[in-house]
Image (cartoon, rainbow, N blue to C red; front, side, top):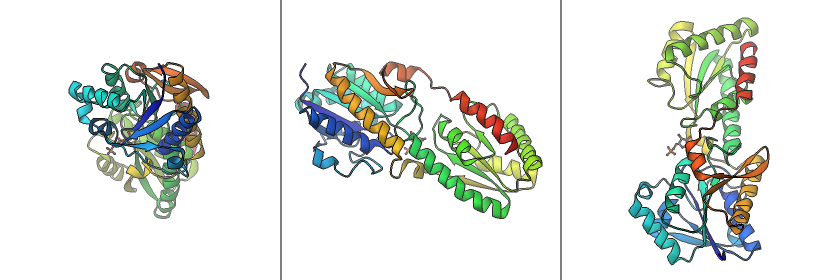
Length: 331
Ligand code: F6P
């Protein structure tokens, strides 16, 4: 089937590097004489015929910009058959030959759903700061989010030290501990709590107290940083803070890093991944692929069934977990 027009959309939580990815797709298409359009506001653009043309001039000076020029959204109506059937009709009306969806797990479920109603190529590109998509070592945006979290923790450490406080730093990740684990290692934090390894509040509190004790004895630490994935501690982080105050006598503060982790100019690793995957997505469409995510494992491009990305859990990197266990005991 000839490919004359490829459409792109960005969906779900935005991630630094989405713009670099749009740029790569657009330039790869232009190289092969393919027209590119971008639907706006995620799947909503497909439903409302809200789109724009994308040419090389439109993606000039874009590789370094955070956010997404196509805007992003989550779209409830895309969960319904009526919504998806309308999207398929609109794609045909626009004579689109293939669709590239740049987003996370939720967006890939939308992609799978669309395939039941539209028989042209649909390709997913993994972009989420959470790095929680099975089948690819990294997702676009993850490295920038880590950099942002680490820079923030470095700053917090200065004030924590000055006041000899414990800081509980909450990072994003939804149900995945990748951001917490890597930012804790890179900031030299004292402890990390991630959903994949969490047992119960009572057990985790014992582990925290034990760790803080060991650090003080070995290191004469005067402040402590504990990094925690969002929504993890039962009742919220103020509950943990109260327990730590009464158990240690330390002053404790809670810091929620929040959406700053999603912003900013993408670091080089994210620009590189976005550029490689955007280009590879176009190549894959031209080779007749559909229903797959383009990803990378061990720096090599891979194609993974969209269904696999949904049904398989991505385990934490146990190499990193072991490292953290060894180095945080002694400081
Ligand atoms: O999936 C990316 C993410 O930033 C998660 O880490 C977080 O739980 C969620 O999106 C926040 O979503 P929203 O921007 O809708 O509050």
